[in-house]
Length: 564
Image (cartoon, rainbow, N blue to C red):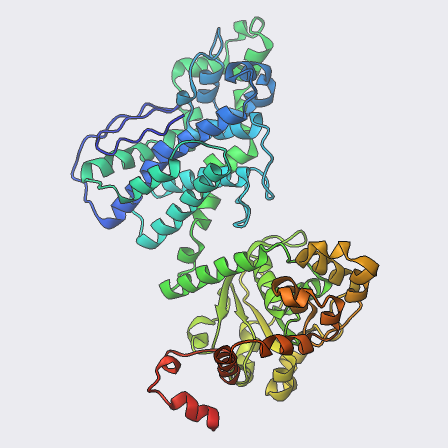
């Protein structure tokens, strides 16, 4: 199946089961960047997403074909359809004779999830999928939601650049996943790229926007069902004389529609009728009145969190569960440990949990914000703003600033986790904690996860982690695996596993590396060229960071600071 997109033609016509779309009459339509943004989304909703769904339906149907499946599985899907959809698929006195071009997105979605034998995503059909879930069903769900969202913006008929980019990226990534996974054919992604850059005059814009506005017939199915033409009403309410002669399926479909109206499939209600919830949560940043810079910071942290927590070596530990429980009770946690103990990753795992929830919690729905200094703290951190603030690897300066703000932190973060509360996640090296005022601060002392103490990694967790980092470790002779997991190296066990995996020379040392990691790291460093070693020394003296001025050979400020 090919995706037909003629970029040179302005008049547009398409059809769905609920109405026939006709080119809108050109009117006085103010064309702006925002209306063009919305029109581009509309074109994708009208042309691209239905074609994607049709391809998926064909690829997942049994070889017997669509008509055969509709007949054989009538009992399974009949009560899931609205009146218009029933007329199309199960016309009176015959069988379906049309093509999938007669199906709107709503009907295609129902058929895909009920006839295609497609595994539901982790949250289940009809629910908003996890961002990290790139499965077939999750991407189908995203496209359905984007179609509903497009109709939700029909009254204003405009989208800001920020909203457009977010929606466009979501749609494009979903379609790209489907294309790369071999679920759909053709150059669908290329077609989207063309739509993103094509010239759209006011007439073209108004046509596509009109098409999406007409989707009220698809999305507002209750209204359609209550305002069906009089002949339909007679047929659905039924004449008493006909009750004794109509076959059983017709009784279900045409007399029992009052019941259908009240018991329409929950997912259809959520996705196509009950979009009040969707409309209230379409853009959490807009609802919460986020500053654009804060929104950008949230999105950066969100993407980083997903990237860090989706790696194959990531495991859940008892320490992580203890940290979650601490946040549930106090909305704050300080993770303390040595270098390489996994403090940073645990912080991202907690952010991911606060974004999406887990089996024990409904979705906390916090917006993640990672701060690398205290410069933005006072502008960003306010009470009851539903933020999850994360500061990784606290420096001496940050520790002192946090101590100064102890009272405000207590009022802004402390308390049981709830829908409006903020959460604070800190991690600090043990030596920084002991040498700063953090160690004397009761607020932090009461909310510590100690990765070198009571919350240290267990033998079972070490074994799982080692096998994730180095799968071939299980083939080592002489029980080397069990010997390694019993060791307590000076640097953190996760870091040892990572170094062992990434540095071939360390793999030759085997168990000996885990016994004395510092010794072998020193040996490896000595083999570096002199200029490389000098660069590492410079980083060490500058606490791991390089500023723009440091790269200027005429700037001696950093040298003077190092001597001081």
